[in-house]
Length: 211
Image (cartoon, rainbow, N blue to C red; front, top):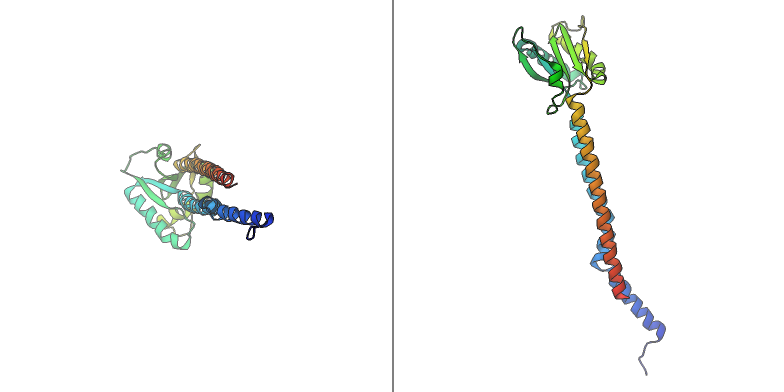
């Protein structure tokens, strides 16, 4: 019979039809763009997580002094900050009355605040309470601020007494953030893995039906 395709030509027609049916199917296209979606979501999550981590990694120094001394310390920090950008933030935690006592360790262990250390005493005799790592790195900066607050202006620096503690609110917040980021990454990987398995099964079933 004229017009009948040969076996090879018919096989090519069927193969071409099946190939384009699979290639241009929605499932297969979604399967191809899945890695791009994964990288996009991962990059966005990494950017947001990095911004949050950089913000949380800026612990502050709480000031527990009398009202006038607190104002002097905060004003000194504001004067020095333009010339020393690495200077940590100073935040007034408790304004004491003359003769009133306070417990810097209890304030430091308050997990709701991002305190890396607490400076108490007076600008002439400051006491820095915090973890060993932070007190050693901030001792000189606190002495500089205290000298400025005491109107010494660099002629002499007060000796900063150090009181070490095991942990602080800033360390607690940092550990919680790391735990949350690890759980977020695990959930993301599991979601992408399961989604990829579902799409692969759909593509395989589609191919089997065409065949």
